[in-house]
Length: 362
Image (cartoon, rainbow, N blue to C red):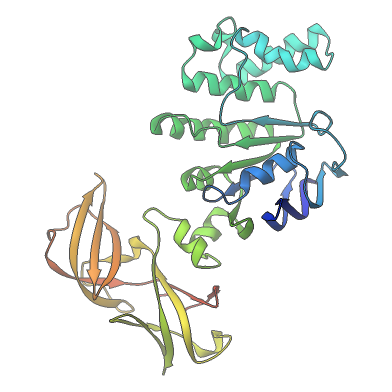
């Protein structure tokens, strides 16, 4: 049984439509991430699932039942917000117990669930402290504990790690993934951070301008982006994208972007449409190298603008006939800013009419 089913969700505020025909499923026990830039509609969609915001059109099903007419308290969900929203005058134990008391749960059950949750999140030694005595990471654990203690059939997370520093965010990602494995409960997680999405999600739904651009496993989203937006949004640094006119030349596709001409292997039967037109050609920074390779690479000559050393590797920014090109490579590169260098590229991604077109593998 699917934990969550959204069908044709639309949302308008006045004359502004912020969600366009959104359909999505989260299987029982599945971790689904809504990923996209600020303002793309992902938090609005989460609020609709929670019942905090009514949809203009469409339906929400949780655990096999339509919940459109139900208030948040009757949807059997728990939500963790970006701001922890802990009661400052209550201890951690009292914060965990609050929701259960409001639902009239007996004291023995409340205490049992508090003990279970505290052990799961390793916060048993914090139960008698108040929120102001806790670090940011500890407060986040308590906020998650307040959701877990209710044992809902669906968890909703709205950018819960965005207030933590980078080191703590990384460790909390690991803890969240372990928590999901232990609980086995369906989770929907909103973030604009692709590292969180790639680490946590069983499935990622990439959103932009109120529409779902692509749904798939993290590896699918990364290696087979469905359109130029997804290609450019996923990856660090993001994919290099060259927009221009193309034409088929024997078994190659020739793309001209300004003064730059790229010719890549292509099989005409993969093309749906004309033999010429406009297209976008993409290349991941890690697929740009500087050592002479074997066959199947496309060579270009460019000038190095900047080299960023990241310790284990380096990001190299080049200018190739007026077009920017970014490479992620070994820090042992001997060239410097201002030097001319030959870059070799492989594993291209082609998009025509905003849709992915297969290319032969290098």
